[in-house]
Length: 85
Image 1 (cartoon, rainbow, N blue to C red):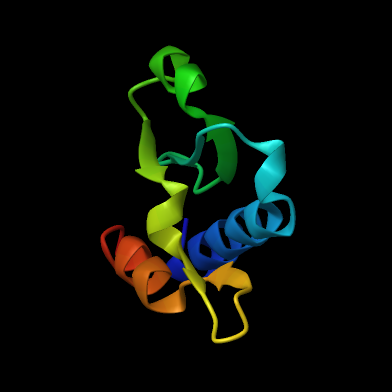
Image 2 (spheres, rainbow, N blue to C red):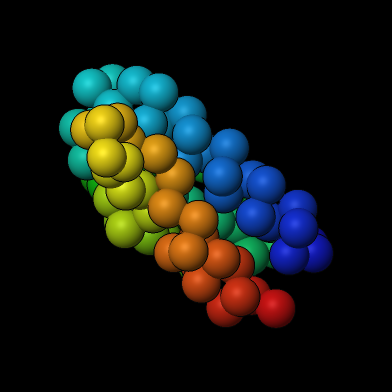
C-alpha cells in the first residue's frame, strides 16, 4: 500500500460516512494494514476483525464547515496516513 492509495481509501470511506451519518450507530474506520483497504464498520463489529486491521473513531476524521456541513478533516486524515509511511 502506498500513502496516496491509503489516503484515497480513507477519504472515500469518510466521505461515505458524512453523506449518510444517520445510517450508522457508532461508526468506526477500519484500515487493513496488509492491503490498505479502508471501510466503515460499526463498533460492535470491531471485536471480530483480525489483528491486521487498525480501528479509528470516524468522528476524529470529520469536521463541520462554517455552514454546518460535515466533511472529511484532511489534516487529521493526513496525520492518520502519515503513521503508515
